[in-house]
Image 1: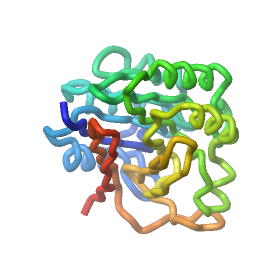
Image 2: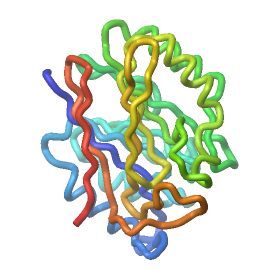
Image 3: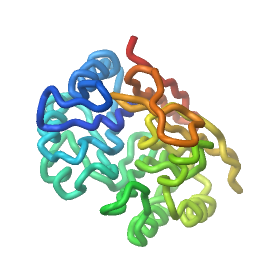
Image 4: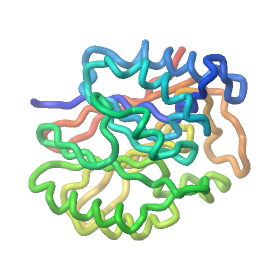
Length: 251
């Protein structure tokens, strides 16, 4: 396999009511519209990166209904609006895979649970940090993409940066011990963002992805919505460790 094609879908904020809205957007309709646009036959793996529902576990039934027969792995992690246990129970069995690390050809994808129960910000528990370290140590020659819900770097948005990954220093200390990490990917921030970070082993590609419903205005000091439409991210992971990625928006 010379390249792997991933689709990241994040912050769907579904509820049991098919007409449920977030800031005026019917989240089920926008989620379905994203799938129609983005879930093409070329996609090998789907990444579902948190805030799958908006505090309503009945919303998980819509994810199951729309993705259960998609014919490719769906790698899942919870966000701060999810209940991790109910997410696992509702989306049990193939194609859904929760947390853990997953090997695809020349790549290992590590899915991390940054949910801090009862909080909007995120934290990687000691067990998750240990699992990350072990998964990186066992990656051998595989390139690694790390996926979590909360952002581990500042975005320049005062209110959002207060609810990111609170133990990012510990997270990066582990990453910097390993030479195989190529990229870090997250949701949570409802906006597109890309930067690079220097590590002892070279540059890492850091990426955030817009929500399938509403977006937050980049750089805003306080909460503010953007006018951009629902979005998603496509990634192509090459055997040589390169990551090509584009953000897509509904027209």
